[in-house]
Length: 139
Image (cartoon, rainbow, N blue to C red):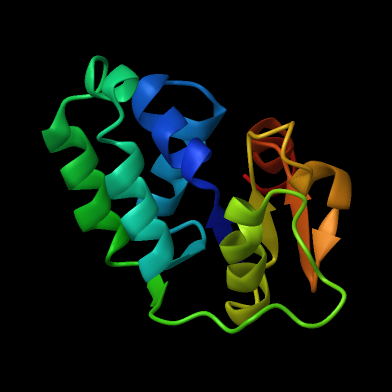
């Protein structure tokens, strides 16, 4: 099973130990599924981790450890453009949709209820679900 974790899910794993996002991250570390990521997502994770409100609650070394761990996943170096007719309601999420298609993902897990990914429901063969749904269905 191939899974994409939205950056908000990865950060959620660090912010809320023992929550659904942390459960998912630990399951990946225990090799229960293949994580698909991209150079674009790793860059986003590094960039977002420097936001003042996150720096106040997350020590830089925890983000660094996560980035180092994630580099052991399936890392897509370049992402293709989305096919005609496929758009994200939030342009910042287009790379997630491209990752789902290029990485032949089974799930795209996101905690962002406002960006429109969950309303889309799927992309390619990937179902787009919340962390709680993923835990209930796949773990």
